[in-house]
Image (cartoon, rainbow, N blue to C red; front, side, top):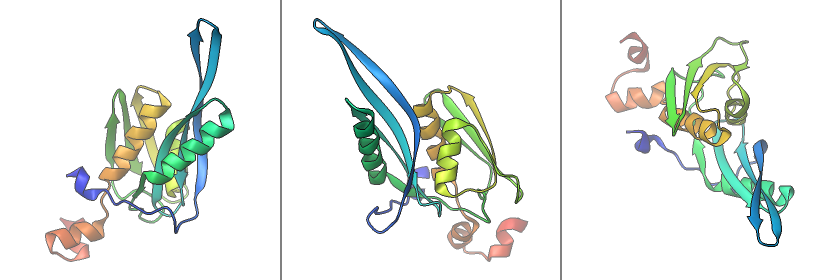
Length: 172
């Protein structure tokens, strides 16, 4: 069911802000010594409901970040945002990470840590309560947060899907 909700977005017509979630130095030990490379996980978004994440690997930090940004622009999704918050409570899972997103009243702010905060701010959520459970690995947390956002459904599409008026979606 969640696969039907994924709305791919073309990156060419949108201006993006990118956020570096984490950077990791990887060491490969060879006969000739140690070889260092870097992997960077980057989140891009337009702060109006479009977000994507990417992984870049290179010998230099700047090259890894730019590769991550390019990768993130290839994996964009559209997320419903209602009055600056998420439409409903949602749990997202990926590997050992589990995240819980809950709508919040205006003025609450983004109550989320590290990797989740980067994704939620990039998508344009202003008020949300979030909890990360299980693994704190930034890669898994970002993917779990994206999973939760993919499962979000706005009331307009639900009303259209069920063939009822908007006010009946909330009443029952």
